[in-house]
Length: 192
Image 1: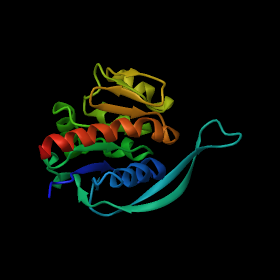
Image 2 (image 1 turned 45 degrees about the vertical axis):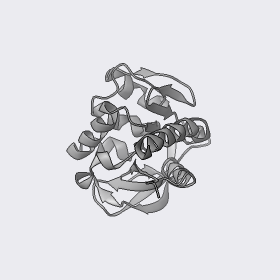
Image 3 (image 1 turned 180 degrees about the vertical axis):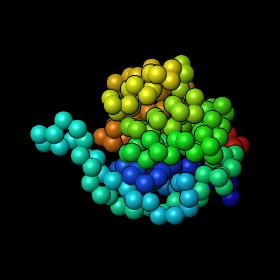
């Protein structure tokens, strides 16, 4: 029986619930194993973000919790088909982790399937991986992308070779199919 493959889903405390659970469940429908990775192999608190009626900023509510299967330091990126950078506030804090930077650069250097939504852009931006790349992200992270050499595109699905991105959780149905297709192609190559 051929290997079905696995992918990394990057999280930390205050990872956005919908941004994380949608890809976590979606890849399983294709027989791909999601491996949740965080600064430590422990349970993390997720949040729900929504625009508030009468608010000019996003409101945040407590979400579910999710167990990280593996710590960043223990990841061998060669074992994975692709990577997903979830949104929420977690990327702002975890992007400085040296092992996460190492892992992020690996997927960009090898042109493997990468998906990113919302604040997830803060991780590849910090890892110096967005120069010359076109990406969607939440409007408030446009600066992070552009200051690091990327180009902001205000669309639900932006495809730049191996990099697939969306703006926020309501774009999942638009960009996720493109990433899934890349994952399936990568799995097929590996299973030859």
